[in-house]
Image 1 (cartoon, one colour):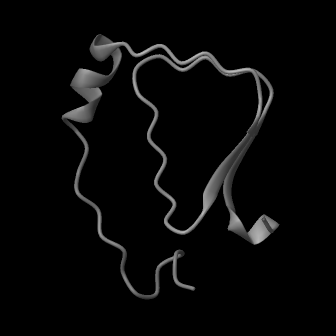
Image 2 (image 1 turned 90 degrees about the vertical axis):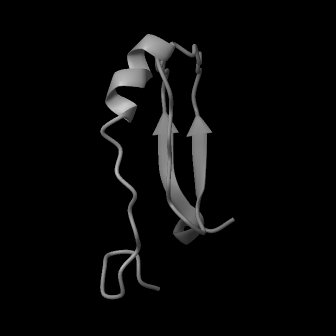
Amino acid sequence: MTKEQIGYFQNGSFNPSGGYLMDAPGTVALFNAAMTFKYNRDAIEKPSKKFKTTTWYRGSWNDQ
């Protein structure tokens, strides 16, 4: 793996509540961390209603 393939890097402990969404096509998330995932529908249900469908556009930051 090269550093260009890493879309997200986490070092340290992390305790998310709710959901965890990462969207970085063609990349990987690299975690060097102590993590505790606990799904909590109440923490994600209301904010998730605000999610919008996104589309990649030519000329955006994601162009290769």
